[in-house]
Amino acid sequence: MKLEVEHSPFHRLIGLELIRAESGEAEMRLPWRDEFGRADGSDWYHGGVLAALIDIAGDYAIASRLERWVATIDLRVDYLRPALKGDLTAAARAVKVGRTVGVADVELRDAKGAVVAIGRAAYSTT
Image (tube, rainbow, N blue to C red; front, side, top):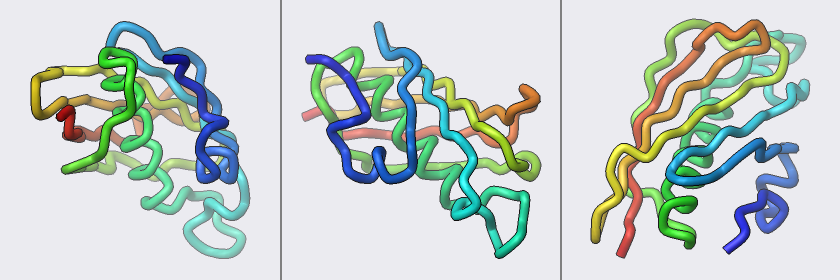
């Protein structure tokens, strides 16, 4: 299975870019758009955008190991500092890929390389 972002209308809508996905790891980039701001004229990302990016990157990490898509069953996000205007990069790693559940850890960095959020997600692997 070839992992790509173009298969999803949502991924296309937000302009998501897949940098790499292999062997239980994935790296993605999300370019800034004004629509991602937490308020009109804000240079901070809305937290929901960060949560979506964590979820998607974790999914790709698990899918790269299983070579098929998985469904999210749980998601936890820790926001560490405001994510400011600029590209975000998500680095995801499969922690466990079992018969029924897969778990991935994800780290989000801003354009300056600062960690702005971390997350852990569980996915159904059945």
